[in-house]
Image (tube, rainbow, N blue to C red; front, side, top):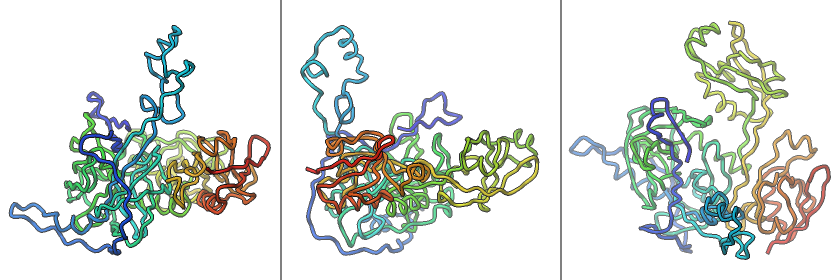
Length: 501
């Protein structure tokens, strides 16, 4: 869950809820089973017919749903957890007040660590979400929180076929994940222009709320460019479309049958739909998708400043006609901003000619720039406008995908090795004198047995240097079940032999 307390709702304890679904098995939700049916012929995206007006003056969405429905998928995830929801490898009794009480007084209880019973056995938890196919060769977009921590991901099509999915990559900052299924000739969606949408226009959502597949709901766009607390990279589309747990990752369509957003969060007191939902604009999602598909991670530019918004009084104090831009509150030592001469009290009004209307725009605009690129900042300093050029750094990368179906060819690196980690930033790679690498953050399976440790940096596979996440995966695939990893550990480098299976 992501808290999202608005100014006018502090007293009602409303929360913005990430709609991963994470529904326990039971009720009407049944598990998926793999099927080996022959692939369906490709269905190219085509313009959906305009909804016909009913005799009551409301639109009829049936033709639109028939056109775009086959490209919407149900996503089932499996997570291995311990008692009380602890993930595999954690102490399942951690935080249990009853356990703490008994341990304090030395009372032995079977199953507790140190009392002969060992840890509680792993439990399997099932969750559901939604997604949609963006290319006929099996790439699927969904939310990052839908597949977060999953050990297995299954994608089910409307024709009842299901496939084990590989997690190509996730970007938690925008809550976007890219999956890949081994299929061809699939129906896929057309993407629209979220910028051209208007408040008040009709939109349609499709997905699997509470596991009920192929559910359609409709409503209007309530607001655009909505900012949520702790969300610096997504100008959400707000709608009144009925969205509930399980809808996460599903598409939001306009009346032309084009995807304009990915349903991601709701604003609720109860945990269910209460009239406000939020979607990630499709242009934001597709930029993330392109980087995940090409590199396995998202690289973002870094400026190195802390900023705040301006109100009318602050703007007047700085000599601005109106409260626009991002006020620089502090500058990090050694950051790209400091090297370029940016200083506290500067107001950033634009980046490469693109206006910064409010402070929330700046992180998104800078984040969309390529690390190492030179950007022109339009700033306001000493009651005058001026331009400065900044060579951007790189933000810390996202973690490697944690799933991938360990028996399938083309699996994720972490699925094969049993590790999670992140790519080295350009600055970290330069300090080590290597083209790239993977910082180990979590361990299990073959990686742990081989002696890898958290904090190790994997810089080579069978003496082949690592340049990026996707190339790392390719080296692992080519290496087979036996290979050696070149590790940077502290000030030394060592080879560790790894055997899979």
